[in-house]
Image (cartoon, rainbow, N blue to C red):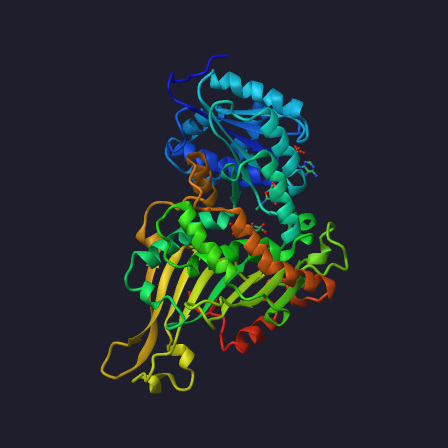
Length: 497
Ligand SMILES: NC(=O)C1=CN([C@@H]2O[C@H](COP(=O)(O)OP(=O)(O)OC[C@H]3O[C@@H](n4cnc5c(N)ncnc54)[C@H](OP(=O)(O)O)[C@@H]3O)[C@@H](O)[C@H]2O)C=CC1
Ligand SMILES: O=C1O[C@H](COP(=O)(O)O)[C@@H](O)[C@H](O)[C@H]1O
């Protein structure tokens, strides 16, 4: 076998551990191809799939070519590029707890590396119960001898403070913290990355970014499908662990942090940790949980969560949760941060809503009657779908009279930018290859996130709190509205655009 290796160029190999699985097919291989297509991968790279399933290189290539998305297929010279990319993809079948099988992989990687400086990235796209075995075997038998070795670890990072600490401790037996890349793919989303740009590079936002002008902040995640196919995993975690403790909390920390000293990973993560550590302990009375039930609409019957065969009939696992959180620091004292996350709701959406205070002594109050909420400004950062940032302002309706309405100053990405937005996994994979750690979770961030949610999760589970049932495809439990009303807040989703 001959390989096209430039004498001085270090080689990079990316091994997808669990290559036969859902995430690998849906996200990781397409993201790697997109990076290759855009010439973002290093000159000398090799991709390996590793899993127990018996496959040949040809089988893996066949699987990957089938999974490359239509988005990519539409691009110029796509087929040609895909063929070149597939030639860089190989497969090795092995057990996750076998140092011998990883040593065989090591041998194959060495053949590709041809004695050059070799950098190796392992992506653990496997269930968490086999993380440690895989890390142990990869680090003992397949670490790079002369370059870096990094490991991307998928969520969930434990299911509470204790299990998360145990996982971190076990990982650190084999890896240094700077080799561990804990992925939270929401941090790789374009509009989440843009949050800091919006805030720190526009004078008009940062001065308003505090309790003085902001009345509440809403972090909303909704999906219009249930746990389809993932019930086994989901029932052990629930929506609070699946979405709130990580994706929404990470967004909150980025949103609320103080200006970092620089854009370096450590400076940003230092500020995020401070936010997490300033948060008030979560209380049960500030939380609403729900679970979807079957619903028939237009002659179609949508299943209940417990209709999933891998979910026990009496499961109390929440598929919906809403919470009011507070940051007890000078900037955010008293401002409710409301989170809402749910599956099987009426739409698929992730957004950040910032509702501003009323204009004091507003000369135009009479135009809004008693419903002053209608007159407050709101900044909406729509993370997905159809990315947009818009600011709701009050505006005079053109004409001779004096009538006001609410209009949007709208930055609609599809209209403004012709370039497609890269998938979060593309950005994060590239960062891991480049050693950029800004968008990955540090262990103290993780500890702080679990410290916030663990007591509440324990209480919910010990008290066997019954979730509020909501029909599949609905807006979720009404309890979420009462919770918001308790803080004089009205959820902003679904009322515009
Ligand atoms: N799928 C998704 O949308 C998301 C997944 N994640 C996380 O990514 C990781 C991978 O997810 P996903 O691809 O869905 O997982 P899968 O269940 O598809 O598992 C991936 C591979 O791991 C192997 N595997 C599965 N179960 C076991 C087991 N009990 N013991 C040993 N090997 C097993 C299988 O490969 P083989 O049998 O060939 O060895 C399988 O193809 C998980 O940690 C998940 O929580 C995070 C966000 C979203
Ligand atoms: O991490 C997860 O995220 C997905 C939603 O990701 P998105 O990028 O499609 O919004 C969610 O479906 C899944 O339950 C969760 O584990």
